[in-house]
Amino acid sequence: MTSQGKPRGPYRKGVERREQILQVAAEVFIQKGVRGSSLQEIADRVGVTHTALLHYFKSRDELLLAVVRQRDLFGQKIAREADPRNALTEAIRNNMDQPGLMRLFVESSAAATDPSHPAHEFYARRYEELSSYIVSRLAGPVEAGRIRGDVPLEDVARLLLAVIDGLRMQWLLNPAVDMAKLAESFIRLYITSSTPDTFPPR
Image 1 (cartoon, rainbow, N blue to C red):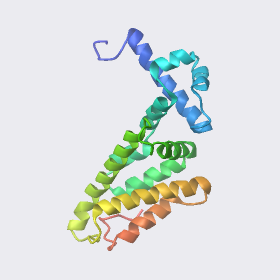
Image 2 (image 1 turned 120 degrees about the vertical axis):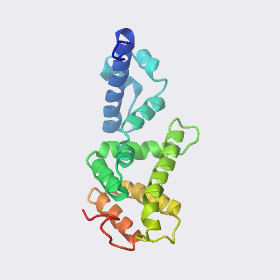
Image 3 (image 1 turned 90 degrees about the vertical axis):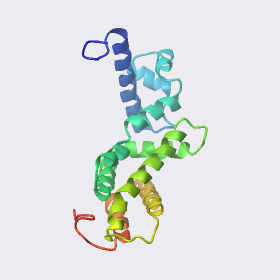
């Protein structure tokens, strides 16, 4: 390490190589999908041997998980936003600009329903964290009487995430589907008041 805390020498090269592999792997996964991608093609594009690639990632699934973690723009966007409506709709619009990445998440999340899949824990925890975020952001408006409180917030959070997952699938089948608009419409179905400070108009 240098005095500034930055890696140097062989360690720095290793970090840079790992980042290069992640970048190339993301491109391959997005272009060809999970099933159409191979470690050998990724290694060839990076310019290393298959064996050298396995030094950084032991399997294609492990590499895929690393890519998914790095490219989770939906989760990252929601985590940064204070307004859940803005967070969700903006994250969805961002996804719509990257259909290959959205397809990658749909494919990998479906595969991760298998408890033995390397990404199983990541997706399970991701849904828990997203649900908790939505609950935490809606609790205040419910207590203030600005939105309905007769439905458990945990149920609302799960339903909202389920709607988004379903819209992703519909959009991948038909890009004419306006995911962001439909997600916003679903949110408004839950709102009982148009109070501006609850969900300000876009």
